[in-house]
View 1 (tube, rainbow, N blue to C red):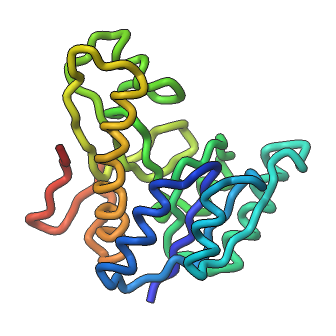
View 2 (cartoon, rainbow, N blue to C red; view 1 turned 90 degrees about the horizontal axis):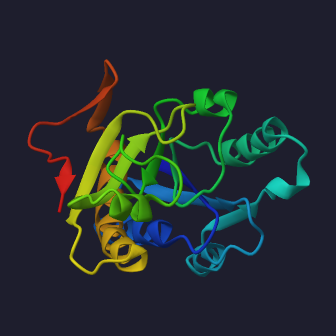
View 3 (cartoon, helix red, strand yellow; view 1 turned 45 degrees about the vertical axis):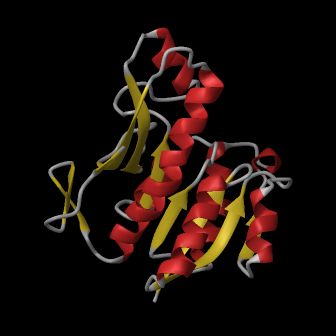
Length: 208
């Protein structure tokens, strides 16, 4: 059975979706731990209620990103992870940290990468007059919101949308796509070749 460690910074709604899917679908995996960089993260309570080990590595207690990442890595590796999942983890990670988990760390970003990396993605899509928006699951590299794309969810931008309504509709798709992508990894259906993710035949990469 494979071990999954999930990193959160807030309410962890994508973490909740993954925990529920793992249990409901009987994955060959367990959520070994949920770790937050913020002591008051709401998602920690959900994890504890479901019998999942939790930990806090408060980034404010460290003088450098490198020192924080070293302690975070120690906390993660205590659970022997096969996969590390970033679920709303709001920290920029150092190259040494991302290299340590190369090929076994996933992130979800609320845009159709490579468009709109960073913050305020939904407002950016609205400002540019995009007709479609969405979210991307990708392997994590040292470059922010970069890395081989596993899956993308596409939603239309509707007349009258604002940042909140668009974000809510994208989040609904994230909750469907991210658990599916994590399961693909757990089931050995993903591999990276020449910077692209290849999957078992018949597995779709787009959600809408």
